[in-house]
Image (cartoon, rainbow, N blue to C red; front, side, top):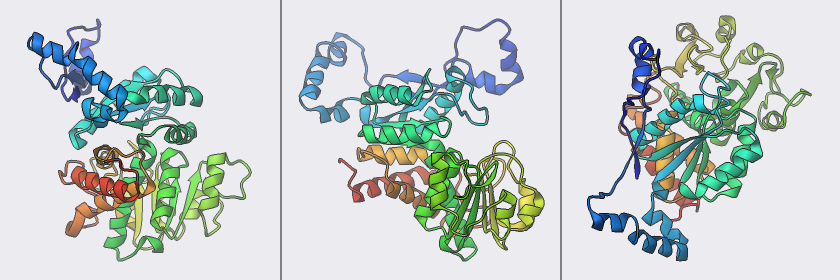
Length: 404
């Protein structure tokens, strides 16, 4: 079976709700949900029924029981991902609970299908404890070829992903962390190329020490950034602070070779790159204090930390998280192809090398069309998913995690 991208219209309405459909087209589109399940085989007569279900299905079940690896060939396992959330960090909405998160999870699932050809099932969990989530997802895992963790608040998201990766032999990927980091790195590679520099010549400052900020910092380090500092609400995350969580203490030990302390604004003085994944507002004088040919990636939605009009006064390259400005840092550029590539080779996990390969492939799509307003391709560029898929599959084979 596969998730079909349709919009079934429910006949059931709640009194007083019809007005929402007419006032806001988003409600009209969401009525009845954004997904349905469709059979991929016909059941037209008793012969079809006997093959699709009993008694024919018993032969397939018995074969899988004897040779468990056959599950990949005779079920949907190798082509379907679970999109799992607990509803604690949904978009810019925060902790809204599992039911309210479902429209986002459905949306994520149809993006998997539309952009990567990967079937996905939205699963919203009514639990928030780390142990509960890990145990629940681990028990669900036999039905899926991969697990995409979504909108789980930090710092729990780090431990949940780490424990599931250790426990399961299928890809586990927290998109809020790694998808954002991959697309950011791809855009930064091209911004550096546009301005005649390498990543190793850049000093970056990241505003935000949540899931995305920590993952971006780690990925930039893996890619060879010259230096990077992470800032939270209290300023630069540095080893001399006594209030750091274990996650922040780890990132402090890995970053900030320059030994900067103090506020975000102080850290931006002379910096080459600003990356915003926290919300809030960065004062214009702080942006003006950055180095020549700086990059401003202000990705908060709906209000960027630095408005593009201000950023363009001082920066050579400006990116946001919004679709109405050039250079949108959009995770849909990464996760469909990453899972498509991992599933294609039945990878046991998604490695750092696979993520870096995805970023390189995504950056390469831009090619000779590189410009200040085009350092990252559009999500609707049909070259994106195939390029990322191929790169991830090749990297999985090279790193020994592919099984076919």
